[in-house]
Length: 291
Image (cartoon, rainbow, N blue to C red):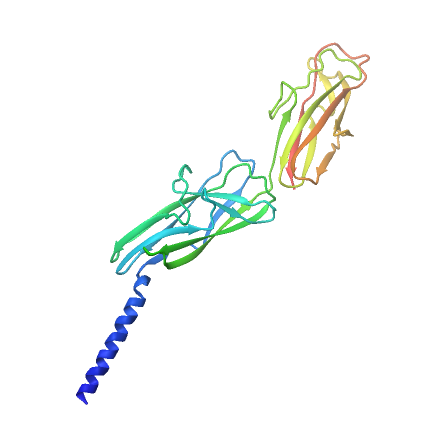
């Protein structure tokens, strides 16, 4: 009976040792968030604020592993999908300045070799390049973070989601004449006023949603003598060939298209009989509102 008991103990010991070998890879612990929220994105903003995130590898005993990130292109960009047919691009970098892109699989993001109760934290950053005029809405993407052993076998694999919200946005500038090319302000100079004289300007609007163009006159739709405010003369304003009211009830135009659109503004001088000599001026405020 005692011999049989000894044999049974030896069998149990072998089983326990076998289980220890199978779970040795589980000594690496990978901690990372389930979701990185990048916040709102304005396509017209001159600069974007990066979002920081991190992953941590720890162990109760010992861990040796290679860290790799999948689902990125060869320059470390993550493509988020959303309402637009085009993808929203996010660049993952190793620094807050955005100058150093991360290595993507099959290259290692990093290698860790730590012992009991040690941990390694890797801080990373997500950058959204400016000028991505995509349809408003939520855009999502996913990367896969893996820990591999020296032979390339997967120890741990986790998915990490990224979320960004593209905001409705519009941007405008004047184009096609010297005094206002590429500017937020422009000047139409008629020189010596002549009835029927016409001056034109081009207003370029970049938008990722439908929008409204409203024009407001500082002088109620008249050119006013700069020295004698009681003396004024009328003019006609057209936007894309459509007459615009500048009186008590100014008109606006609703644009259903997005993208970059050029709008033609035309000002035509009305009758000038019996008006005082001098300089006549008016100011127009153009307001673009995203819907």
